[in-house]
Image (cartoon, rainbow, N blue to C red):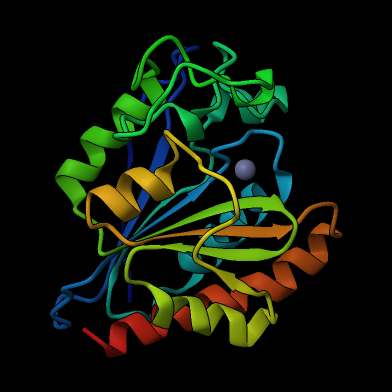
Length: 226
Ligand SMILES: [Zn+2]
């Protein structure tokens, strides 16, 4: 049995809802752990949005887990509609969070961090939501070269994803990412964060077949650690 509540944590720059589907276990299960899954931080990373929506479909059919999961499948909803990496203001939302190392400088407009930290409404909504929800783990679905990037204490969960996907786990992707969710939540706010980079360009049917069982196994295991 599952209970689902739907709310908007938004709005986006365009005034659209940032939909959040929160699934809670049956009332007799004492759920302590909370997971947040984000898709579409970068609007052009279709693989991550697809897997997030695939998970939503599975959870709506059945939610047999012992933890609470919040699923935001299209975080950068304007970018998803426009198929752009950035939000409607041209800001890379994964460089705009208020980390200690935030900087206005960027060599490549792809990574434009915005005029100041937390300037963007999507990130303002996310930070407010993180304060309220206090997740024990954040899983952010992107696409690039296949890698499971961990920030904070989430190696056990990452290893379950790895068992299913054979993706490598990296603590450091080799360059600084000021303003990113991994740095902000994972390193600075003690909310361990997995940035899950699904293989870019992989057929979407393969993405669903490979990653949904992997993430479901991770959620089951989190319930056993409850
Ligand atoms: Zn990305």
